[in-house]
Length: 52
Image 1 (cartoon, one colour):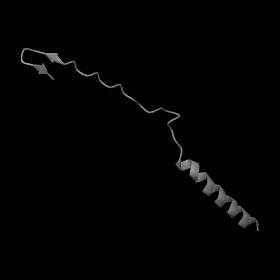
Image 2 (cartoon, rainbow, N blue to C red; image 1 turned 90 degrees about the vertical axis):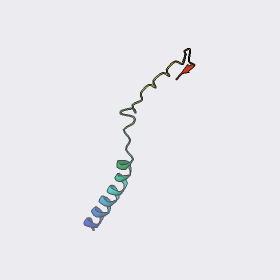
Image 3 (cartoon, one colour; image 1 turned 180 degrees about the vertical axis):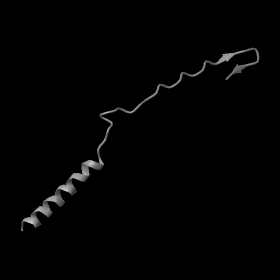
Image 4 (cartoon, rainbow, N blue to C red; image 1 turned 90 degrees about the horizontal axis):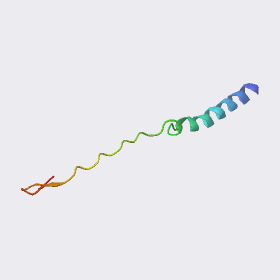
């Protein structure tokens, strides 16, 4: 009886412990990196027209 109870307990522990192990997220530990966008280049007007 004791080995059966031990096997059942071990099985239940392993089944319930794998859920959080696969859904562990590290975003609270290290936030995602974001980089600032480059400012757009100014549009200038020459004698020939608008340069892009």
